[in-house]
Image 1: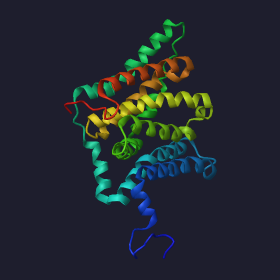
Image 2: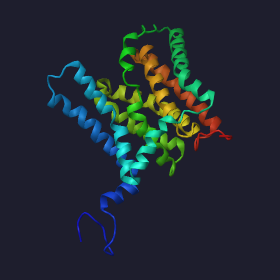
Image 3: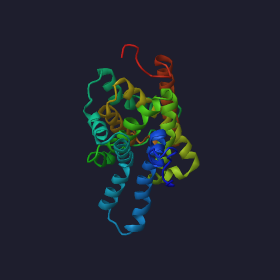
Image 4: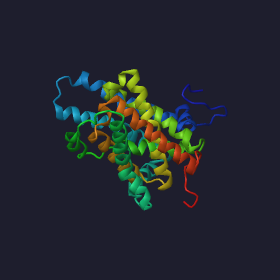
Length: 270
C-alpha cells in the first residue's frame, strides 16, 4: 500500500485529496498563509536592494494570496469550471439600494461620529491623510482578497456554522494574515485592538455577502471604501480615537444581530 494513499479495498483517493475534501477551509487558510507570508518574507532576502516600485509590486502579489488559494482550492476540489464560476461572482452586482448605501457610506458615518464623540471628550481630531488616495487607485483594495475570505471561505463555513461563528473564524485568520505587512501589529496591544476592529467589520462583510446573494462586487466595493475612509480620516493615528471608532462598530454589529439574527444575518424576505 502506498504511504500517500489510503486504500483499504485497493481503491480510494490520495490522502491529500481526502484532506482537502474534508477540511477545505483549513486547507484554504494554510495555502493563503504559505503564499502571502512566503512572498512577504522572502522578498527582503531575495530582493534586498529593490526600489519602491518593485516593493509595491511584491507587496501587491502577496495580497493576492486569499484569491490564489481560493482559485486553486476550487479547481482541485471541483475542477476549472468551479474556479471560473468563482471569478464570475464579480459580475453579481444586483442588490438593493440599501446594501450599496451601506457599502458606500456606513464607514464614513461611523468614522465622523467617532471623531465627533472623541472631540466632545476633549480629544483633538487628527489631520486628514489625503496622500493615501493615489496608492489605492491602481488596484482596488479588497479585490486580491475577497474571492478568498468571502467567495470561498464564508460559504463553506456557513454550511456547518452560523454566520456569527463563521465571521469570527474568518476575523481571526484575517487579522493574523495582516501581521507581516503591518509593523504596528507586532505590538500586542495594537494587535488586540486591530482584532477588535476586524471582528465587527468581518461581520458586516458577511451581512453584505449573504444578503447580496454572493456578490463579490459589493464586498470589494465595501472593502475599498472602508480602507479609503479609515485611511483618509486617519482613525488609527490616535489610539483613543481608534478605540472609540471600534466601539461604535461593535454597537452597530450588535444592532444587526438583534435585528437580523446571528445565525443567518438574512432578511426574512430575501
